Image 1 (cartoon, rainbow, N blue to C red):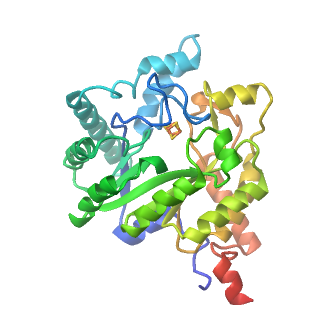
Image 2 (image 1 turned 45 degrees about the vertical axis):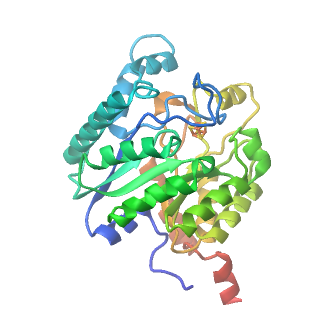
Length: 347
Ligand code: SF4
């Protein structure tokens, strides 16, 4: 493969190529849980934020509450109860909560970006963790709420089965592009155990291969700087992933939400968190080692500051992006420069 005309294949350039115009994700928390958490919602990955991932438009409500009064931030956020409202509730309430989220999200997106195309994104927790009949009800209902072009489902390797892949494929047959976002975080089994991921790298591989062999596009999530991990472990994960040639990758800097087990470890002085500049170095080399046509969906985390325990200072998303571009240009760097087959080809 030869050098492309771009520094790296960003998600926004992929969307632009595919749709020719603006396309945005409508993120939904559909009331799914996670097999790695206890029924009382404790446990799980040591960095798991009890409140799950959150759409941008909902963060405003949460931030207002978090910055008011004197009680601990985590208690105030829990009071807002944005996610637990829908967890474990009956199907009718879940549907009504999904409808409300989709409507609010579309209103927000139209006001801010006026997108031409909308993509439905099941973001919080493990969105294939339910019987297929329940998944079908939720997906069908949600897809019917707007003219969605894509169904994007975020989940874990142990929640991928032949039957839920069959369901996902059925949407592809109807012309909806389907993507699965699959958490790996690191390929190092010792680290996976340390952060209590509840799966191994071979569990990931099994799920990934099942998706691939059924034509489902996959975006793999990685975290750079997990406890006990440095340059060598991160680059081993990148090599592991590059060999698989995934359609997409989401890179996250280690971010530790308040109230998590990992935050207690951090406060006790058991952990360090990579700085923005260190993350920049990891990210540039990772991009160089990934295949040129793997889409880079994300470069950093964007946990809202009122929920972020560490790092307390980090680049804003846009500043990190600008610095990355500048550095890659200065260094003559480009995605795939150190990808195994490129290196062999130029030997
Ligand atoms: S897989 Fe996700 S939702 Fe489940 S415990 Fe880990 S971070 Fe939490």
